[in-house]
Image 1 (tube, one colour):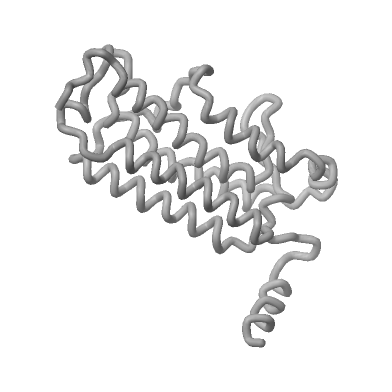
Image 2: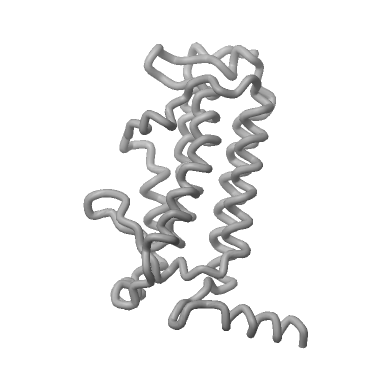
Length: 205
């Protein structure tokens, strides 16, 4: 009974017409975020200092640099989402127009962002600079920041499906899909780490 009353009270706090995420939507986002968190942790485990810092070429990133980029990007991308929450009003017209295809778009976003066949340059603030002093520090930073993203997906009562952000020419996502963008970005750079490890010159130990 108490849970039902709390639920009703929470609904009353939402803006008129706003919709919070369904439990299924929360579970899907959290599952994807947890899965790519594990990919990162597994990829960075048990590496020697030589393996951690190995670069296949001067203009290629090491595993350490990929990891730093992901730790810094987690906060940056989640910040983009929270900023869009403040600046983007609920748009019922867009919600209705995108309703039919939005589940397919969720999957498309994840596949597109994680696709390494399309290369991209990281913006200057997210390029590795060696700011972390140890392997453990950067891994712990990523894990903590990812946990904050997962907590957001689990607890937010904001209308993520009714708000939209334009992230580039012809590239607009609802804010729920930005959670998949964050998660898939991790998968993308874990693939990059694996490319480094697959190089013939990668240290054996």
